[in-house]
Amino acid sequence: MTLPTERPTNKSLPSGSIPQEAFDWYDEYAHGDIDRRTFLSRLGTLSVTGLTLSVVAGALTPNYALAEQVSFNDPDITASYVEYDSPNGHGKARGYLVIPKNVNADNKAPAVLVAHENRGLNPYIEDVARRLAKVGFIAFAPDALFPLGGYPGNDDKGREMQKTLDGNKIEGDFMDAATLLKKHELSTGKVGMVGFCYGGYLTNALAAAMPDTIHAGAPYYGTPAKSNIDKIKAPLQLHFAELDKRVNDTWPDYEAALKANKVDYTAYVYPQANHGFHNDSTARYQEKNAELAWERTISFFQKTLSA
Image (cartoon, rainbow, N blue to C red):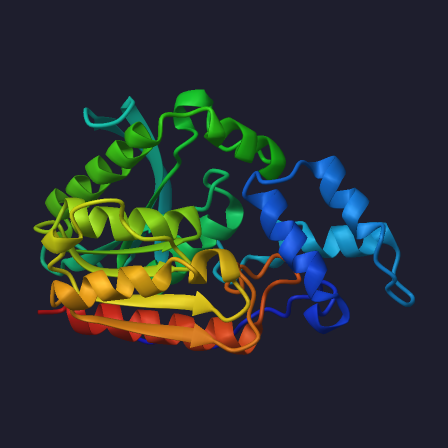
């Protein structure tokens, strides 16, 4: 399996021209700690030479036209939306399934479950699934918002919708998705999981809740599992942003628990990176750190899911 070589350029406002306070406030806004009015009001207090409030706010808000690294028409993959039974979740769920073209009954592949942020299955996460399939993994990205009609095409609305759902049922939907991948007719039965933000939490949670199903986990800036850390069997590769105080404050206790339970883990902290640095649709994106983290993730899955 090889990595894609062509990577698009993110043309959003360079992160170096935006004060750190703006990133911190956006993180609070994105996670529901402040509302949009407060977020914009705070941005208005900044004195940023040559930049207007609308320019800064626009740079921090996702532009998903920038987030396509692998086209849904790529000849090496087949992508489709699949509904599945979710008895541990909302009863019925749906996700984005991407299968490498060379995978068949005689040439099966390991699978990776992809967990989105706190706003549903947006185009960035779909692209992550395609990136995984492009290098040879079966990838499946469920949409937690399916019970409400699915991702609405707008992150603000998606965030509000996801807040209304029962978190335990969301976890159940992802657990049943992991089972689907393990049993899929084209899967080797080896299942990895990668998730971002809330999806990073889900990755930690499923590694703890499904030790015989999740064989490797790569959470990006995710908070710890709430229970059963002692049950984790899968190796973990954890990715953190240096400037992400909210998530990083949870890491020392989590690391102590992983050590106490002899979990095989590696943690990386990316310098001068903000929460969401892998998401190439906003000014939080840092190409060098994002590419390094992704190369590490692919190598990790190739190693842990091939045996």
